[in-house]
Length: 313
Image 1 (tube, rainbow, N blue to C red):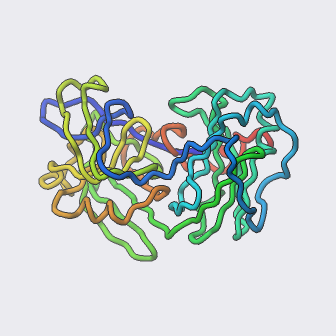
Image 2: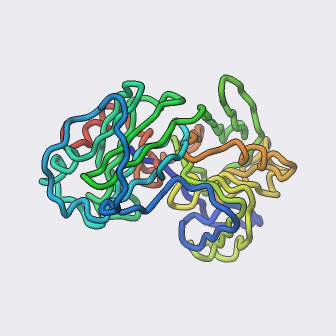
Image 3: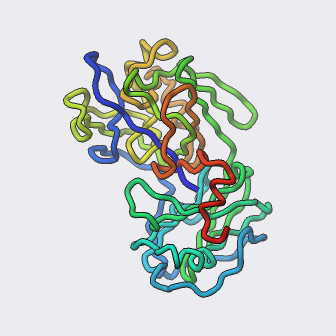
């Protein structure tokens, strides 16, 4: 279960402001809200089990596969309804060993969640280095989840309230559905030739300020500056962030390098303040769909295709 993501594009003759398009050349400032933890599987970190198992019972697996295994959600965190559980490995797991590895990956919940593991080709890793767990539908708010990886790594986390934001690039609006309420926010998305990725993305983290440099991704001197209230959507560098251009163009025209821009009149901060990692951002009306392994693009696969990616299908 993986995540989606997007890219920012090259500069137009206009001085368009957008995002970096890559994880490279992006710097952050201030405290971060990040669910990832790089705890190793051989750490002394054990926890209790959840109420109901949603996959198979463990059986012996090659022990070396779990040396240095990592889980993307920190102990005790609260995440949004779209967050997949992502386990990464120091070395690629051969296809012949993946079924045994999956048997030592256990997810339990207190709500009987139906879900499945699926092997994902991560944008920045080799094939066989990432496997994700995703429910059939978004997590139910309030669900308590326990993840056991191998025999030495356990994580407990909670699903928070539901927040799903839908960006319509043709209408230049973002509709935010949270706890039964709906708000509509004017936005500006990727300009022609630099379109924002289509599809479903999941917030991986957020930063008060992010430095974006177009030179790191071959876009010349289009931009090199700090952008505030940056909500991170893809590994390739797609953000939803404050953009002064949105003061003029939000709700009217798409002028960014692929990111989604919000006005600096308080609009961007208000959205930033309510977002947590795991919240869902869907983009409609654009062109290419974000790759499954470009961040958490897991939800861009149908359930049938998702389950087909399991070695235990």
